Structure formats: structure tokens, C-alpha cells
Image 1 (cartoon, rainbow, N blue to C red):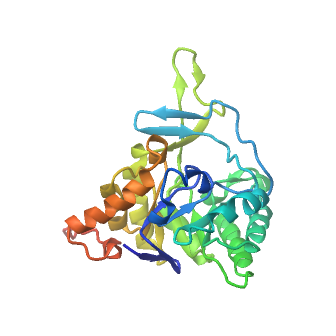
Image 2: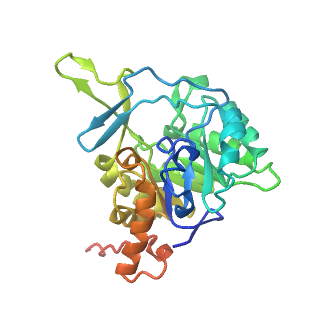
Image 3: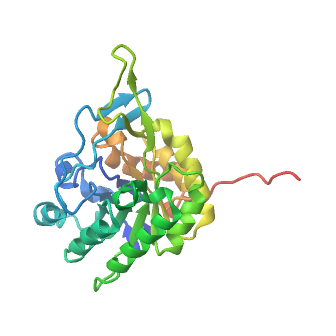
Length: 311
């Protein structure tokens, strides 16, 4: 069940996704952290953030809309109060999700984390608007994305033991393959695909938005077919490994992402319905492999068999 991702050895390819698993330690009485491949923390910013006003999370027909607004305790509080508690789970890779509204914000967060122990990698959230350049989302502009990734990689390498930089791309683009290639060329060691899709909900009776911020991110089973397609396209365009996510609920969902080209997967929205989903999926994937005579789960990556196109 072990896989290697950007130089990190994972016990198994099932990780908890950012924003759905707190800082990890909050789940220790519910989930056996030593039985999952790893976890990605809530997004960490330079200073604490309160997030958006309520309502900011609603259920949809096959998923949910969220506009939490990246609420978090700030990088320093995470280092002091959360990270030390995760040290006892040495087999669970802790990946720190970082974000900001300028490149300097991202750099400052990574610099702070560089001084801390117990982190396996950085996941750079490229779906944030660059306020210094008119609010253009980093992950939807090639120049902005390349600038961000290059800066993040440069500061991550300044640590004595350099940590991998994983870039979480925005799916709200024309070509995910092009953006994946840009991230790779700028120095990314891996990719996370995909983040939430921009969406909205309306209350027909009140004629008002169902989310206070009007628009929100759509996640859950509804986005899985699109996420699979994006992982497949990105995997064909780059050589760096991919973390696939988007609507994974059962073991076969995870297998599909691996076959599409992912090396490992993240479980997000499923944790809201079942707080033990990530552990259940880790066990379920192992059982699936045994049932289908798969000796090494890593052999599934990129194993999609596509019939040749007729001339």
C-alpha cells in the first residue's frame, strides 16, 4: 500500500484534504491517524483570519457549497499549538497548506514553517486572488502562477532539508494541462487536482443568495467526473506526481483517480458526512486491491486503458 510522492513515502495513498480535517489533531479521537497516508492542514496565513460571514456552507444535491473564507488561526499559532501535538503520529505525513493575497504573504508563511519540524511538504493554494494585481486568481494566470510557484520553491529550498512544493491548482481555467505545465516548469514538485469549482445557490422563495458571499466553491460527488478528466489531462502533460481529489467517497472512486494518473488522493467533502471517511477509505482501498489481485497499489497509477483512436 506504500507509495512515494515527491520524495515522501506514504503509508498508503489516502490523505485528508485541506479545509475538511481541521489541523489534523482535532480528529485524533475519531480517526486513527496512523492508518492513513497523511493529512493536509487547513490553509495557513500570515495572521489569523475570521473568514466570511454566515451562511457560508450549504448542502447541495450531490455535494456542498462552501465559502468559509480561509478562516484559520494563523501560521504562528499553528506552529506553537497544533504541530507539536501531531509529532506522535510519525507515520502520518503532515502537509501544510499555505496561502496569501500577495506573493510575499506566501513566502512569509513558508519561511515561518521552515523553522518548524514535523512537516513533510507544502501545498501552495494557487486559487487565491492576488490583491496586489487587481484580484486576479494566481492559478488562472500563467504569469502569476509561475511567479508564485518560483517564489515558493525558492524559499522552501532555503531550509537545510528542502521540503517539496505541491501546487493546488484552480480548476476554473480553460486548460488545466497548460497550467499544470506552467507549475512544473516553475519548480513545482507535485500537483493537487482539483480545488473547488466556482458556483452559487439561490433561495427561490426569498430571492436571495443562499451563501452570504453570493458565490462559493462546489465540491463533492457532483464534481468527480470533471476532476477525473482534469487529473487525466494534467498527468499527460507533466512528469511530476499528482494528488487527485474531487468527490471521492468509496474505494473505487480512489482507484479511478489513480488510474487517471494520480499517485495518491485526498478525501475532503466525504469527511463532513462521515468523519471517519479517510480511514474507511484507506482500509477499503486495501481490501479492493486484495480482491482484484493488485500486488502494489502504486501499479494502478496511470493504468487507464484507452482504446486507440481509429484513423
